[in-house]
Amino acid sequence: MISQPSRYCTVELQALPSRIGQVRRIVSAQLRYWHLDPLTDLAALGVTELLSNVHRHAEPDKRCTVELALRGRRLTLSVHDHDPRLPVARDLEAGATCGRGLAMVAALSESWGARPHRDGGKVVWFALSVPSPAQAPPPPPLHGPAAALCPDAPEVRVSEHAPARSAVAG
Image (tube, rainbow, N blue to C red; front, side):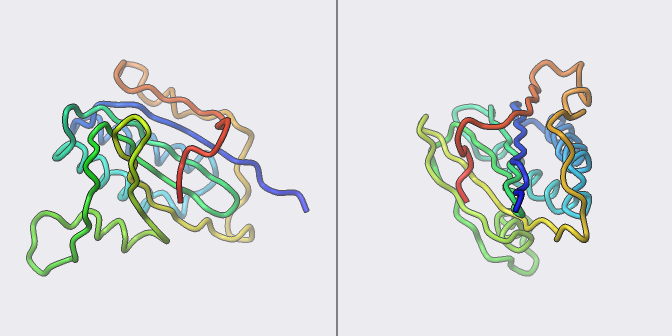
Protein backbone atom coordinates (compact mmCIF):
# COMPACT_ATOMS: atom_id res chain seq x y z
CA MET A 1 0.00 0.00 0.00
CA ILE A 2 1.31 3.44 -0.91
CA SER A 3 0.70 5.96 1.84
CA GLN A 4 -0.06 9.61 1.32
CA PRO A 5 2.93 11.91 1.95
CA SER A 6 2.77 14.49 4.71
CA ARG A 7 2.04 18.11 3.94
CA TYR A 8 3.14 20.95 6.20
CA CYS A 9 2.73 24.73 6.10
CA THR A 10 3.54 27.46 8.63
CA VAL A 11 2.59 31.12 8.84
CA GLU A 12 4.28 33.48 11.30
CA LEU A 13 2.50 36.70 12.25
CA GLN A 14 1.47 39.25 14.82
CA ALA A 15 -2.07 38.28 15.89
CA LEU A 16 -3.63 41.61 14.99
CA PRO A 17 -7.15 41.85 13.52
CA SER A 18 -5.89 42.76 10.03
CA ARG A 19 -3.44 39.84 10.02
CA ILE A 20 -6.01 37.32 11.28
CA GLY A 21 -8.08 37.90 8.14
CA GLN A 22 -5.00 37.39 5.96
CA VAL A 23 -4.12 34.13 7.68
CA ARG A 24 -7.70 32.91 7.31
CA ARG A 25 -7.36 33.48 3.55
CA ILE A 26 -3.95 31.75 3.49
CA VAL A 27 -5.32 28.70 5.34
CA SER A 28 -8.28 28.53 2.96
CA ALA A 29 -6.03 28.81 -0.11
CA GLN A 30 -3.64 26.16 1.19
CA LEU A 31 -6.45 23.70 1.85
CA ARG A 32 -7.91 24.31 -1.60
CA TYR A 33 -4.43 23.70 -3.05
CA TRP A 34 -4.28 20.40 -1.16
CA HIS A 35 -7.78 19.60 -2.53
CA LEU A 36 -9.29 19.69 0.96
CA ASP A 37 -12.09 22.10 0.06
CA PRO A 38 -14.64 20.39 2.37
CA LEU A 39 -12.45 21.32 5.39
CA THR A 40 -11.82 24.94 4.42
CA ASP A 41 -14.64 26.60 6.38
CA LEU A 42 -14.10 24.56 9.57
CA ALA A 43 -10.33 25.04 9.48
CA ALA A 44 -10.57 28.78 8.82
CA LEU A 45 -13.12 29.23 11.62
CA GLY A 46 -11.01 27.25 14.10
CA VAL A 47 -7.80 29.12 13.24
CA THR A 48 -9.64 32.44 13.49
CA GLU A 49 -10.83 31.55 17.00
CA LEU A 50 -7.33 30.51 18.12
CA LEU A 51 -5.74 33.66 16.67
CA SER A 52 -8.44 35.83 18.26
CA ASN A 53 -7.51 34.28 21.61
CA VAL A 54 -3.85 35.18 21.04
CA HIS A 55 -4.89 38.74 20.16
CA ARG A 56 -7.07 39.06 23.30
CA HIS A 57 -5.05 37.15 25.88
CA ALA A 58 -1.42 36.44 24.95
CA GLU A 59 1.35 38.19 26.82
CA PRO A 60 4.06 39.49 26.53
CA ASP A 61 3.45 39.89 22.79
CA LYS A 62 1.12 38.83 19.99
CA ARG A 63 3.72 36.98 17.89
CA CYS A 64 2.59 33.49 16.94
CA THR A 65 2.95 30.72 14.39
CA VAL A 66 0.10 28.87 12.70
CA GLU A 67 0.91 25.34 11.52
CA LEU A 68 -1.07 23.13 9.17
CA ALA A 69 -0.02 19.49 9.13
CA LEU A 70 -1.67 16.90 6.92
CA ARG A 71 -0.70 13.36 7.85
CA GLY A 72 -2.68 10.59 6.27
CA ARG A 73 -6.39 11.23 6.84
CA ARG A 74 -5.90 13.84 9.60
CA LEU A 75 -5.40 17.59 9.30
CA THR A 76 -4.00 19.24 12.43
CA LEU A 77 -3.98 23.01 12.80
CA SER A 78 -2.12 24.64 15.65
CA VAL A 79 -1.20 28.07 16.96
CA HIS A 80 1.98 28.56 18.98
CA ASP A 81 2.35 31.76 21.02
CA HIS A 82 4.75 32.93 23.73
CA ASP A 83 2.32 33.05 26.65
CA PRO A 84 2.77 30.03 28.96
CA ARG A 85 -0.77 30.17 30.37
CA LEU A 86 -2.82 27.25 29.07
CA PRO A 87 -6.38 28.07 27.99
CA VAL A 88 -9.51 26.71 29.63
CA ALA A 89 -12.54 25.85 27.51
CA ARG A 90 -15.88 27.07 28.77
CA ASP A 91 -19.21 25.53 27.91
CA LEU A 92 -21.30 27.31 25.34
CA GLU A 93 -23.74 29.30 27.43
CA ALA A 94 -26.92 30.84 26.10
CA GLY A 95 -26.40 34.55 25.65
CA ALA A 96 -22.66 34.50 26.39
CA THR A 97 -20.81 37.08 24.32
CA CYS A 98 -17.24 35.92 24.99
CA GLY A 99 -15.35 32.88 26.21
CA ARG A 100 -16.95 30.57 23.65
CA GLY A 101 -14.05 30.21 21.21
CA LEU A 102 -12.49 27.02 22.52
CA ALA A 103 -15.88 25.42 23.06
CA MET A 104 -16.63 26.19 19.42
CA VAL A 105 -13.27 24.74 18.35
CA ALA A 106 -14.03 21.61 20.38
CA ALA A 107 -17.46 21.32 18.76
CA LEU A 108 -16.20 21.67 15.18
CA SER A 109 -13.15 19.42 15.49
CA GLU A 110 -12.41 15.74 15.92
CA SER A 111 -10.14 16.59 18.87
CA TRP A 112 -8.29 19.56 20.33
CA GLY A 113 -5.83 20.34 23.07
CA ALA A 114 -3.20 22.65 24.50
CA ARG A 115 0.30 21.90 25.72
CA PRO A 116 3.32 23.84 26.92
CA HIS A 117 5.96 24.59 24.28
CA ARG A 118 9.66 24.10 24.94
CA ASP A 119 10.29 27.86 24.54
CA GLY A 120 8.03 28.66 27.50
CA GLY A 121 4.95 29.45 25.43
CA LYS A 122 2.14 27.12 24.45
CA VAL A 123 0.57 25.37 21.49
CA VAL A 124 -3.20 25.12 21.06
CA TRP A 125 -4.28 22.71 18.34
CA PHE A 126 -7.29 21.02 16.79
CA ALA A 127 -7.68 18.17 14.32
CA LEU A 128 -10.11 17.51 11.50
CA SER A 129 -10.74 14.23 9.69
CA VAL A 130 -9.97 14.31 6.00
CA PRO A 131 -12.79 13.08 3.75
CA SER A 132 -12.31 9.61 2.28
CA PRO A 133 -10.31 9.31 -0.96
CA ALA A 134 -13.54 8.80 -2.91
CA GLN A 135 -14.70 12.25 -1.74
CA ALA A 136 -11.43 14.16 -2.19
CA PRO A 137 -8.41 13.61 -4.44
CA PRO A 138 -4.96 13.32 -2.82
CA PRO A 139 -3.01 16.53 -2.30
CA PRO A 140 -0.79 17.68 -5.17
CA PRO A 141 3.03 17.86 -5.03
CA LEU A 142 4.49 20.05 -2.31
CA HIS A 143 4.60 23.55 -3.85
CA GLY A 144 1.85 25.99 -3.00
CA PRO A 145 0.57 29.47 -3.78
CA ALA A 146 0.14 30.49 -0.15
CA ALA A 147 3.23 32.74 -0.05
CA ALA A 148 1.93 34.78 -2.98
CA LEU A 149 -1.27 35.77 -1.19
CA CYS A 150 0.24 38.59 0.83
CA PRO A 151 3.62 39.61 -0.63
CA ASP A 152 3.24 43.17 0.68
CA ALA A 153 2.87 42.13 4.35
CA PRO A 154 6.41 41.65 5.69
CA GLU A 155 5.30 40.55 9.15
CA VAL A 156 3.46 37.56 7.67
CA ARG A 157 5.94 34.86 6.68
CA VAL A 158 4.66 31.74 4.97
CA SER A 159 6.65 28.59 4.47
CA GLU A 160 5.67 25.21 3.20
CA HIS A 161 7.91 22.23 3.77
CA ALA A 162 8.05 18.75 5.14
CA PRO A 163 9.02 18.90 8.83
CA ALA A 164 12.11 17.07 10.02
CA ARG A 165 9.99 15.58 12.77
CA SER A 166 6.44 15.93 13.97
CA ALA A 167 5.90 19.44 15.29
CA VAL A 168 2.22 19.09 16.12
CA ALA A 169 0.80 17.00 18.94
CA GLY A 170 -2.50 15.43 18.45
